[in-house]
Amino acid sequence: MAVYNLKDIIMYETQYHTGNIISQSTFLVTGGAGFIGSNIVEYLLKYGARKVRVLDNFSTGSEENLAPFKTNPAFELMTGDIRNLDDCRKATEGIDYVTHQAALGSVPRSINDPITTNEVNVAGHLNMLVAARDAQVKRLVYAASSSTYGDHPGLPKEEDKIGNPLSPYAITKYVNELYGSVFSRTYQFHTIGLRYFNVFGPRQNPRGPYAAVIPLFIESALKGEAPFINGDGETSRDFTFVENAVQANIRALLATDINTHTVVNIAFGERTTLNQLWYRITELTNKNITPEYREERAGDVKHSLADISKAGSLIGYKPHYSVLDGLKIAVEWYEKNLQASK
Image (cartoon, rainbow, N blue to C red; front, side, top):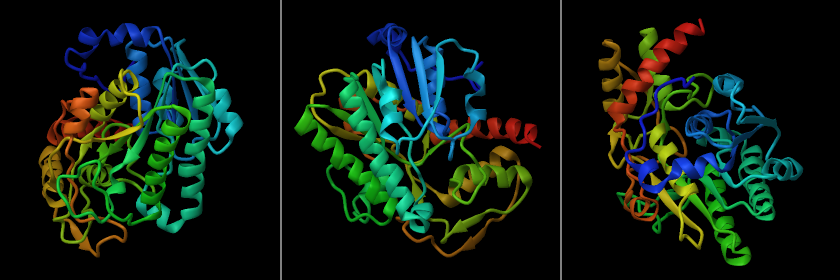
């Protein structure tokens, strides 16, 4: 049973018969025990995929995220590491489509440990490209990142205008795109990178040293505690509800007539400051708490906003959840699950 009810992608399954394509196909989700990956797994199983295989080493993912799917006969779990090419080869055997979500996220984590971040995000990504190419999968879609824009000041962010990377994490995600381009030109193996902008929603871990801001804020509000805000709170982000990211993955996986490597922004297309975000969360949780402010974090950009027109024209992406829509669902999920974990 789904952890929360997914809204159907409007007319998409009917118009493009993706339900039939999904039910006839096999899928690999790397990092499928993670936040975004497990939501993709849920969607694929909901629409009757013939097989959904998860490859995960559980370094950041959680078996709890996969618990709802383990009794589904179409679900298959493979414990392995993308840093091991043999694991990647085994994982891609008999697979039609790969959505590659496995990575070490977090700018601060990459600053503290650039070597491991590089090993996972670059060497692991290359292993997946080689394995998927050799297995002749129909499409590999991978998690790119808005961090690739670096210090480029332009808003909204357009895919062909990037600056200098500001963290080791940003470098690794840009290298992923360079490898995608090389594999397209050299081997005619064409992949699609999805530049995520601050994805949030159910199953995102609010605990640990590298937790993202929205689950941290929601947990603080539910506990009646003041959160820390880096800087003056006027830093803004294009927060993106996870179901929008799931939609993007499905559309990109099943896209036709894309015969080159490409990257597209996946976001909602609207800026929200950290102060506005906290205010909305306190409204939804009926709390009145003043946050605590501290120094800005190294490696962060001040503002982020995506131009999503390329994703719309290329893969038909159209986000159906606003930030407020997503926050309502997320708060409800955390209320239920944080209480259950006590």
